[in-house]
Image 1 (cartoon, rainbow, N blue to C red):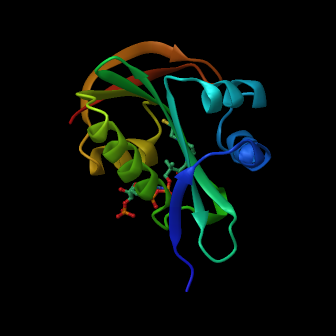
Image 2: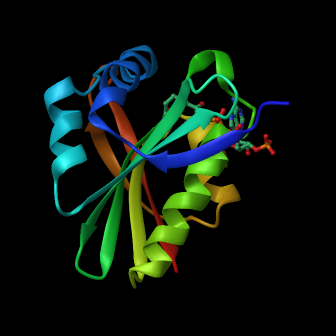
Length: 149
Ligand SMILES: CC(C)(COP(=O)(O)OP(=O)(O)OC[C@H]1O[C@@H](n2cnc3c(N)ncnc32)[C@H](O)[C@@H]1OP(=O)(O)O)[C@@H](O)C(=O)NCCC(=O)NCCS
C-alpha cells in the first residue's frame, strides 16, 4: 500500500512543484522564485511523495529569520487532497523548526481559505491578526497566524 514520505526538495522536482503551484494559486510563484527558495540559505523546502510511485504530492517552504520563521508556501496536488499530504508536510516543517531552535512560525492565509485555516489550526496555529485588503486576485484580507514552538 502506498504511503506519504517527506524529503528535501531537489532541482529535478521543480517542474512538478511548479505545476502544483500553478493549479493551486491565482498568482502562482514562478519557477525562478521557487528555485530561489530551493537554494536560499535561509529557506527550508520539502516535498511529499507517494512511496510507491514516487510522484510529488505536495510541498512546503519555510523561510527562517533568526529565531522566527515564516511559512511561505504549502500546497497539495489537487487529486491528492484530503489524504494527509499537507499534514505530513506541516509535521515535517514544525519538527525542523523545533530542531533548529526556532521559537515561532508566522504565516498569512486568505480569509476565505477555509481548508488552509483549518489545516493550520489543526497543527496548533492561533489567529493573531488580520491585514485588510492584503491580497489581490481576488482582493481580500489576510489572516495572520502564529505557532509558538
Ligand atoms: C490547504 C491544502 C494545502 C490542504 O492540503 P491537504 O493535503 O488536502 O490537507 P490534509 O489532507 O493534510 O488535511 C489536514 C486538515 O486540513 C483541513 N482541511 C484540508 N482540506 C480541507 C477542506 N477542503 N475543507 C476543510 N478543511 C480542510 C482539515 O482540518 C484536515 O484534517 P481532517 O482531514 O482530519 O479533517 C490544500 O487544500 C491546497 O493545496 N490548497 C491550495 C493551496 C493553498 O491554499 N495553500 C495554502 C495557502 S495559505
